[in-house]
Amino acid sequence: MAINSFRHNIPPETALSKNTKIRNGTHILYVSAEFEKYIDNALSFLTAGIELNQGILFIDSNKVRSIVVAKLQIQGVTKSQLESILFVDNEDFYEPSRPLNPDRMFRKFSETIGPLLKTGKPIRHWGKVIWLDGQVNLLEKLTKYEGCAQQFIKKVNSFGICAFDGMKLPATVQMEIMKFNQYIMSDNEFVVSSFYDKENLHPSIRKEMIYETAISSLRIAQSHYARIIEEMPDAVFITSRGNIAYTNKSALKLMKANTENLQHKVVWDIIDPAYHEEIKQKAANVLNKDRFSTCEVKLIAMTGKKVDVEVLSFPFVFEDKETIIHIARNIKERKENHELMIRNEKLEIAGQLAASIAHEIRNPLTAIKGFMKLAEQGSLNIKDVYPILDAEINRIETISSELLLLGKPVSTEIKVMDLSKLLYDICTFMQSQANMENVMLHFEIMDKPLFCRCNGDQVKQVFMNIIKNAIEAVPHGGKIMVYAKEADGHALFEIIDNGVGIPEDIQDRLGEPFYTTKEKGTGLGLMVCYNIIEQHNGHIRFYSAKGVGTTFTVSIPLDS
Ligand code: ADP
Ligand code: MG
Image 1 (cartoon, rainbow, N blue to C red):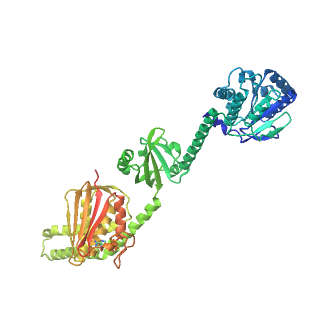
Image 2: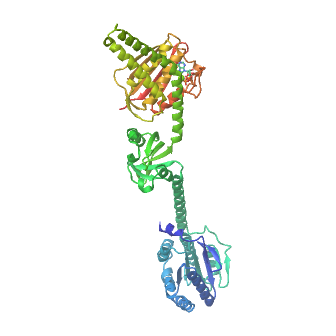
Image 3: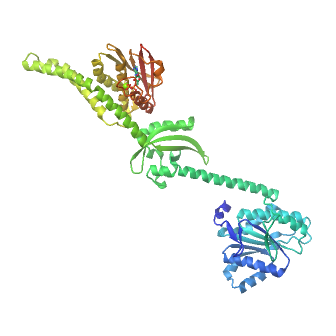
């Protein structure tokens, strides 16, 4: 709105003369008794305005205009300074023969002062009011006018003097209109009005003022909220139909970008392609039903570097358009801690398994060595035992490669892989420990592949933890069954043991960090499992009865 755009150019205080300061929006009543002094005061009002380079509106008769112009010229006021004063004839302005309509009056004020508003300068105006001769309902007319002038002065943040001929203004009317003015001026004095009532406005004007105040508070609130979002420490992205419509400061920092880099960019350009499918599904859900959605993704900064973020998204109607607001938080540190924890647990397992693995590798090696000796002595045709040698060597290969994996740093790669195959390899690997403990590990794995989007290393670790717990829970001669199947769009894995079971009173504590019932336990295994599976949008559940055994189930959504 035009009015707001110039308001900030005007200082909160303005000078009435060089030595007198008044607030903007001040309304002054001037009741004059002597023409000479009136002219004198008008002149000092004008010269102060010229010296202070303010916009000046001067409404008076043509006669007064000629007098003041002549005097200003004598004082040395230049032609261009004179031309910058807006002189308006008071007969034209006040239209004394027409009834006063506050709306029309207000419009007239706005139109007249328009050219001065455009300059952006502070404004002062002077109006010589002329409705005094033989007017019916003079009081009503003047109070309406004063209310209107009061409102206008406030609206444009100017200050104004309403001048009256004291000889013609009845005392009763004078008393009434004093209520509309903060200051009262005579030819010789300038005083604060003790009758002033700032609420004293004509009802129609008052309504507008309330509306204006409400609109302006709303605008202030809006800009306040906009700033809060702009300054938020979390990155905020607003997207509309897959295009980036807004990014706050933190988002630009996170993306190492400036506004132009990102404005109207397609959102897919800044997300690691590995996450596109998941995000597409989530975006559809946000707009359709779920009001909020969270996910973890990698964004690609302008430098090409990938940034791990956790994103909360929700729909928002903005300027009649359906948009989605995304609040992203950098989770590099959290992720690193998480990865460190997984790695520690992995190394712990590797250490614990080392003995059984060494033992397990020694067995096939002994067999191979034996066959070679026999072949050397000529009592065995080595070709006859090729299938056995092949199987034994494969076994060593599987075991050693799994062992190598345990020592490797945690990979963050997510890809579609067959979890049937993965579980098969793990069972083969874990067989060594089961054998050493004299435990039977039986696995029944569907022929059909179970394709899931996952981090293979981490899912392996989950199976290994759970199978290892089962081996530790069963007595010598115990039994563990492992099944893999498909159920309800999920890959479902069951690890069933006939071990000691988990007492009911500790079941809730499983998965708590460092909660263990074992002398050499870490109490971290299940916590890591829960963490990993949660990140894969899956579940881990268990059923257990003391002395009977425990069933752990792991389910992970199939890649559709
Ligand atoms: P840890 O194996 O180092 O103790 P975990 O987090 O792997 O740590 O397991 C926590 C606890 O859960 C174990 O100490 C054990 O009491 C219990 N637990 C886990 N799996 C089984 C199971 N199959 N049978 C019985 N108890 C189990
Ligand atoms: Mg464990």
